[in-house]
Length: 476
Picture 1: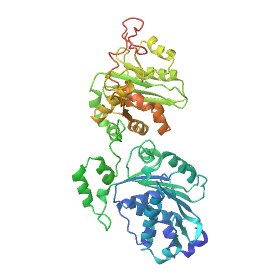
Picture 2 (picture 1 turned 135 degrees about the horizontal axis):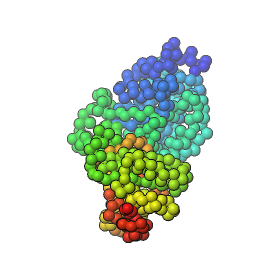
Picture 3 (picture 1 turned 180 degrees about the vertical axis):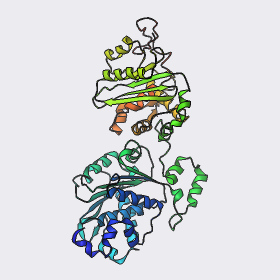
Picture 4 (picture 1 turned 30 degrees about the vertical axis):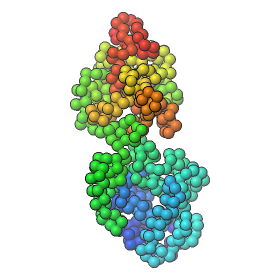
């Protein structure tokens, strides 16, 4: 902290090292949620955990006050440290966050009140504008570009309302060794970067959940609010989940599958029951058409996934080789194992390998005709909704994978206004919202596709007899 450290107080060293010493100087008694945040931040600062902290919170947990104390502690740890506080609107930064900071400082030790200056949009220490907190609305990536100061940190308030491109730009500015990035907010939607932090990016983030059922009664929060919401909406409702439990909604209105349903399928105690559900042995494959896409294979027996594999930037023929080896390792005979392969954009040379290898093959085309033609626009929509029902009914057993959660639970659908059919968004539409292609989700949907046997063509000789264009079922 340099020369200025000695001007703060005799206890400045302890205050800079331990956030709870600062809290005492602020006359701030942290609750159970705020302690979790403080502990996560100290673990990060002392190199014991990730510097990226994500918090999903119910209402009434004191998350804003906690982030204010944390922001001050980060400033006091280093001379000329700079923090950036951002939220979806400037009003949330100034009228909510800075107002809460003023309220906290009003009760603080007089020395702390003397060294902290708060303007309409910023906070400074000792009047030095290069040492403090700047606020900005999370509306343009440019607001975060060009910031690479030492001792820099970022706090996102109401993080579920901040666009993904802003998240990525902000993360890119944190190049300093002692960085910290805190994203905190109510989990209002699943289509946001905060949701990604708890799912596909979970390995990168310290993930905390603030459940308002654990919040004590204070002057600004009455726990009886929780009871009233439970009576009005039900404890399992999305309203109660978001506003009290600090959990994401079960499913966004326009998404097919809930992440809760996917995570429930990761419980391997259900494996044996799912394995015995049917006698089906099926391998679903999504083959890469472009360099960055993944070749993905899932194998299931009954309703249990028993093997999986994926790899990007490899020739699809290598994926076919791997699928054949997987079948052999599982000891599945050719006449017992059904391959369902996304054949769109694949040359017939790739598909022919299944036929010459004596495999039972269903060539799957996403835009092919669904079995339930009055209900689904195409085959991939039908396959996805079928998988969604199995997961919702808690019948399937899957192998844990955070990326799979993300891809399955963020795929949207809509209803065709002309004919009322359900339509799954295309891969291109999905890619406009996310950087990754939903290859794993599609391969899993094909793995569970129920209409492979009895559709397409049936051959009892050496050549397949085509019943519909591009769709064949091979039997030796």
